[in-house]
Image (cartoon, rainbow, N blue to C red; front, top):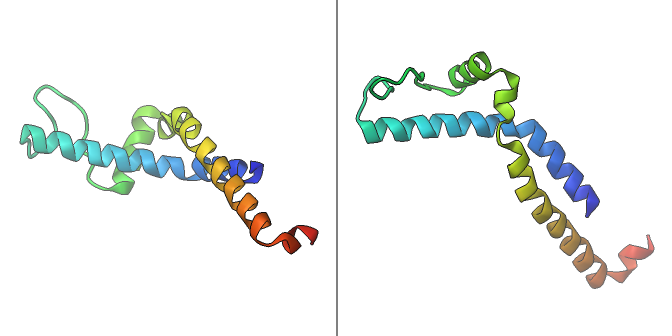
Length: 105
């Protein structure tokens, strides 16, 4: 089970920046749709329009630095690690229950 937790933590650290950029793009599209703004900014707002992945990544890095790519990672990890550990624990328990000879190896 611990191996599942460690692997999930490693995967989260590697992939979390892509989730941040994706959510910024999705959030910006929602604001544009609600305000009807073609330029991607609300009235009086100076926030940039996120047009694509690499442009959004560059924008986050310029405005917030590398720490901006990991905003919100702690709550995400605290939410996903327990489920990953339980999944691996259930898998290992089921595997050992169904094939007792696998434990002898």
